[in-house]
Amino acid sequence: MNPDGASARCEGPSSADDPMDDWLFLSSDSAERLGPEGSRGTPEAEDRGQLKTKLISAWNSVKYGWSLKQKSKFSKSSAVIMFGQSYELRDHDERERFRRSFASLLWLTYRRGFPHLAGCSLTTDSGWGCVLRTGQMLLAQGLLLHLMPPGWTWSVSPCAVKDDMDLLVSRPTAGAERGLDAKEGSNMGVRTLSLGSLLDRPMEATHRRVVSWFADHPTTPFGIHQLVELGKSSGKKAGDWYGPSIVAHILRKAVAASADLPNLVVYVAQDCTVYLEDVKRLCERPLPQPWKSVIILVPVRLGGQDLNPSYIACVKKLLTLPCCIGIIGGKPKHSLFFVGFQDDHVLYLDPHYCQPTVDITKENFPLESFHCKYPRKMVFSRMDPSCTIGFYAKGQKDFESLCTAVHEALSISAETYPMFIFAEGKCQEEERTNTPPYNIAYIQRNNEMRRVNTRNSMDEFVLL
Image (cartoon, rainbow, N blue to C red):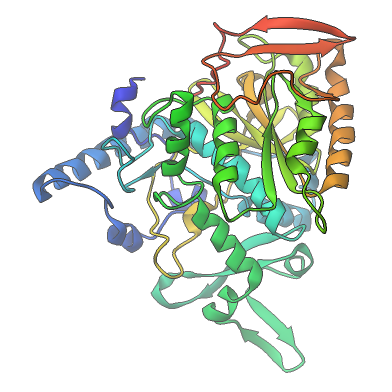
């Protein structure tokens, strides 16, 4: 793929039969109102540009749609594991619980028609931004754990409201277990909630706020504009291909620069090692709240050109942990966000669908395109070995429990070398603010240090 042509690409899956059955889109009138925001030039040039984008989008939908025509099939004889939760699909209620949980994940994809990226004329990240999008999804999962109550789910009620906008409902699990509709029972009967009363609910307001942080606008803290700007210090620019290791450092900088999350920090492991003293120094703060919440990001490489089979069981074990917030990885030419597994298949969200930009400045902007209804899956052996694994700890005790649980999971790979390790003390070198063009990874086992030069490997994690 030619990065120079990235601005014209709109790669993504499409359903062969009914696109609405597999993907949640903006309504056609919403897309029409949005238009190509930020576009420049004469009306004739804009019309030609729009036509060209539509034609290329249609071609890519056909190109990538052929391999994604069929919905992924899930066995009812074995459980699905996702973010530490187990779902027995042979049970109807469990299947519904899994459906709600998956649909509650934030799905961040290619977008088109956003304001120009600084220093260039690009108004889409199609063809080059998929690793940034999977990084956004990883961070978004951490933010949901950070800001929402345990077991929170988002759902669309069957009730209709003005402007054909679905009524949005969000509840903690206990409330969601009682049903998906947007009605509340009482001794006086059942009443339908108004849209205004729903949006007044704190959890739905927080959900909408988190979504807005990832919108494609120069002012949002975790949107594509901010991530590209922060990537410049790593030698990247709009239109370049990013790797999971570089994206991990970009996310760290983005959270550090955000005034919206004063109680959250991001730590990026160095040389496959989480240095406990460095984490402690990053998280400690004065009383009364002596410890900040932390997202741990660990860039790793699980073998050579193919995934080392000995690490598959370890990856599965990590995905069973409630503290795991997903994996930025992929398969050749595609970066994906891995969220769980069933048997020998890994579940993922795909960022390669190119959607119109959502204008978050409008009141009650549509949320449908930020949630995906159906999970995809692929066999573990197709995973690219280069990835970044994420974890979240609410406080100090949670971090200590995280270390214990993750260390136990990593022991599965002890027959080869641990995927990564926890080490007392601090990193011997100063914290790197710029990610080098390649990494030298050190993997420790039995007090021995083994040097792995990844200069010629895919450690740059270019999975587009």
